[in-house]
Image (cartoon, rainbow, N blue to C red; front, side):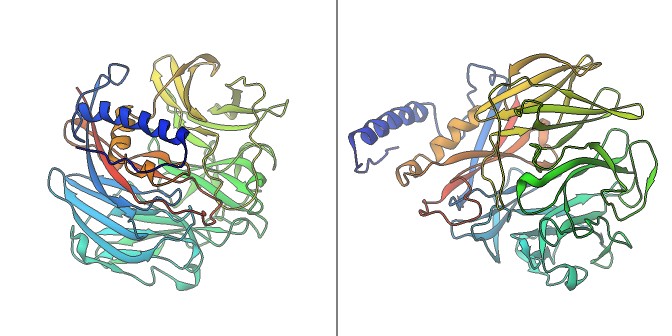
Length: 472
């Protein structure tokens, strides 16, 4: 396998490119893309097999989606021409591809998502940021090439300004979708439920689910089905499209996604409003908390634990956790950073956050872990399960490190086609694990976001890869 060297504009870039070629030679000497040899570090317990799905749009930050349900696997993404594409396979068999009539602009909100209903029909939606609904459904079970556009889901009047669609399954394996109707600062949350017998959607709630009363909207994490059998929902309120106006970390739970209550079991009448819902931490606007960066997990006693960041008394950005203990939320600062403050604000996608927390998780009977990405460093805060105090911090990984070298090898030509930075993004698959507990990931290179505005340069498409990760 050879690599053709193109002319470069400077000696410095030539030296950089020669170094890159040497690195590629070392990688190529290890074998093809189906690399099974593990690194001699913390990844040595993993074996990674990787396959190319397609050339994908790389012009800006956008999220593909990987779904596994039993032996069926689906990937949804935007191809090199920005067209929404869905691929399907039976695990271990070849892929079949289908393109629907939906094309991506420059907005990083416009991801694509999907779910399979109990009768085997795939539902796909996305490419919306305050846009009329883009929704496709199979007309034949498990046949990706039977996807058809559905113009109206339930009610056209509330499907004209759709954002943040999420499919989910309730405890009866019934398919639901939720999305925001309206804009940032004045949006409402809508839940619909699907009837597989009539192949029709209806509103899950008679009344409005959330009401910002014309003053604010909610940005949600969840609902997440917890170990106690309840669905748990956390969110922040936001007053305007300006990201700095996030405030008031809030909580509610439900046994069935229909009736809701607070963490003490008191019923909450819909719609949810700031006045009548439970506030975990009354972080004010300009207080350093942002939507997307509040995450929910559970401890050894099945209690809710929330990780998030805000400014401390010195104005520095710090990581916090909040846990429901008895009748109160116990809030503990777990980081002790100095000189670090993330000042964010304005509208549109903010690009790569300098800090990103993940859901708290049980490490063992005595400790809880909170993983945080700060710039390019992955940190785990190890907390005492009884006090939530930080016992230590340690290096961590979000995915097997082999994926980095495999993705770089697969995309080696792209680095010569652009002078703009490209970032590797790795996404966890959704749904089931594969045979022998195989975990699935997608990886993809793209330019950073640009607050939903066009870049001055469009790079060549990059290779979207599927990675199968299993323990040795």
